[in-house]
Image (cartoon, rainbow, N blue to C red):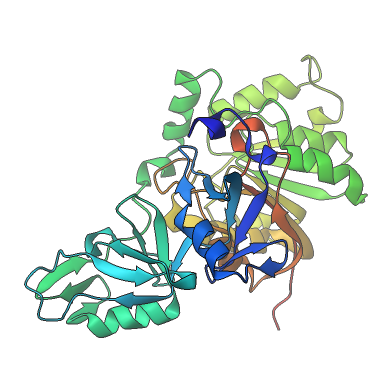
Length: 369
C-alpha cells in the first residue's frame, strides 16, 4: 500500500502478536474479540518482509514473535474426500477462519508445520492444530504425510543454500558489487547506541562475518581487543585497507585488530573459551539456515564461562535469501538452553532499510551442570 512505502515503520504504532497468535498492545493481550479479529484479518505482508495491519483505519506495524498467524485448530475435509488437493480450514484466535492447501506445508527442525494461505500470508500450527492434522492424515513419516490416498513430501522450511558454504560465493559478490547490500558504512546502530552505555572493561571480542569491519573497528576504538573473521578474503582485504593507520578511517586502535580468514561454521578449537563477547550482525542471516545450530554451538564454545553474546538479528518473512529471515520464536529456541537473556527487544532506531526487522539481544552464557 502506498502509505506504507511513503513512511518508515517507526512512524506507525506497533501491535505485538505473541507466540500463541494473540495480538497485544504493550504487555496486555487484546480482550475485545471484534478488535482481535480486525487486527488478524487485516494483517498483510509488505514487500520488505515486514507485516502491517489496519485497525480502525490506522496503520500498525506488526511485531510477531512467531509467524503472524497461529492456527488454533483445524477443520479438515472428510477423510473419504476424493480430492486431496481441496483446501483445509483453520481457525485463528477470536474465531476467524482461513483456508490453506496441504501442498503449502513445510516443516521446521522442531517438526512444526508452517504454511501459506492463498494470499501468501505465513502461518504455523499450534500444538492442538498439529495434533488434529496428524489425526486426520492416513499416514505420516519423517519425510512425508498421506491424506486421502495422496502422499505429500514433508519439505524443509528452508531451501538449500549449499553454495553459500563456499568462500568464492561471497568473494564474487564483493567483486560484482562495489557496495554489497549488507554494508552500512557505519557500525550497527544498536551497537553504536548500547556499547558506550555498557561501560564494559577491556574485553576480548570476536566478530564473525565481519565484512569490511565497521563493527570490529567500533569495538577496537572503544578499547577492546578484537578478532575479526570473514569467510571471504576480499572482505578482509577491504577491511585491512579501510582500517590501517594510513587510511582515512584507520586509527592506532583499529590497526591492532586481528583480521582472520576462516569459516564461522568450522570447529576452531583454538578459540575455545577465548572471548568475553561475541558480536553477531549479518552472519546468522547469511549462512545456510540449516547450519544455524552449528553456528550457535560455536558461539558457546568460543565464549568464556561468563561470556556474553550480543546480536542484531533479522526477524522478517524471507525464506529465500540471503539474507534469510527468521522469527523470535526460532531464535529463543536456539539460545534458551545456554544463555540468560539480559535484554531482548525489537530495535526502534535501525538503518532505514531495516526498520521493523531487527531484534537486539544481549545474553550471558550459562554454565551447564
